[in-house]
Image (tube, rainbow, N blue to C red; front, side, top):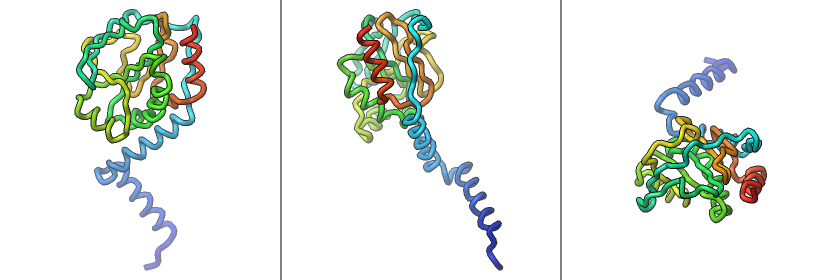
Length: 192
């Protein structure tokens, strides 16, 4: 039997289908999605909302519990500061894809911006993920429901709140948070 180009293409095509849509490819498929999300996050960066178009958050009264030590934290105590809120999960490939850029941003801005990483996962999962990836982001579980303006069902979603409690940025999906445009935006918000 002679192997033709058509046979090779068919084998590759059906192999790809099996790989993408069966349990055999599940681990690698997740890595592929994470890789695509990471590339997207390196290419696309978020843009700030014009001051006159910013929506005020109706209530920053959001009770949180720190994953690291169980301490209570309330967002309303941070009024008058720039706040970055990121909704994420360890099982979310786009969330994982943007984490390195968020860690870099946090390292440089942790004394100027309040960072709040929100997850519904338990301490053991978050701790393992952070240890495995050498992350040190301030992560919380919500105790009360967020205001509708900063609540989401889509992961990842990131909000940046200005000092007056208005949404300066809302970004759905992975982004490059360590870009010069994000840093310039934060610098502008800090100096407002």
